[in-house]
Length: 210
Image (tube, rainbow, N blue to C red):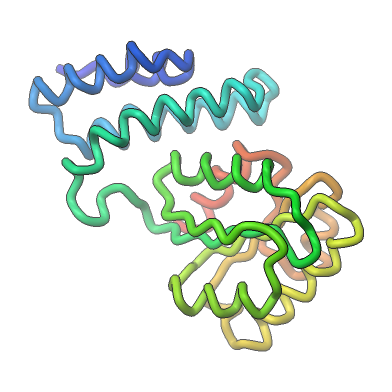
């Protein structure tokens, strides 16, 4: 019988060697790869996200935990059926036009992937029209906009407006984040949600995708 709690604890402890050993053992015992993914790894990253939100874990540790999960995913991916690695969330994420910051955005993308969501990371300095094009191409149902400068926050509103004008607003949930961004600003520009950090962003995306 696979001890998923031990797996979660190893992931939260960022113990890659122990975690990969537990995954190999579980596979050897015939535990389905999808169970290991959902009950062990994704459940463990949910705890990491909560700890980050509460200030009990910090970015270097979160990155180490995500890296440990990535090592295990290399083993699990060939064993998972098509579509088993992802939940309902198909996420498009990018830093808005005029802004070149990407560390926070990349951490959010990593946490969302670790939560089982499909993530398309567009990069930085993304024009509103490009977000619209990518929503159509990728069939995204969640769009995450990042801005780290007060001067680029208006580009978030321009992107929301472009999505509305393209007739895609009913198809997607829009999330915003970044150091100067607030819940009040999210409400003002018509976004569906705001997240202050990668842990809460991942949790919110799962809620919006449900």
